[in-house]
Image: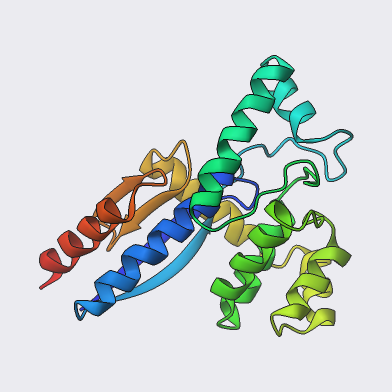
Length: 215
């Protein structure tokens, strides 16, 4: 039995990358039990008002966006770095280039049409959180897309024309309808919802529950 999983997330969401790793662990165990999973990534912008070229670092952004003191933000990011490291992810918030992610979400829809969404999602998250790459400009996104086998010229044309912008907005509208206010958020077989970067055991339990309900 294959469980359909839709994951609302944002490229600029540190918990989404952690949640992705935890979900992958759950999927590995689920498949070992004879189950299978089909995954689609859905668009969610945590900060749609963010400019493409934000002037400042991640501390500056969070201090302004959340109204926190800089020392509080630094402590929060340090803790997030430790959490990510536990999942094998080497976050580098000092190198991170904060940006608007709407183009990245459009790219993920294009990648899906070519059967490369999973690879593109991983590439974008690693580029943003680990490598300090810019993921908000057409040229930079096209370079990353080419790395996973997509045609660079096709990517540039699609992003410049907004070919998949309606797909992004449709995902966001569906999130509103489902009451999704934070990410990651997992929807299994259009019946079960799991909010947050839960432990693999919790996600595995949800996969088993979905499979039993579809049996």
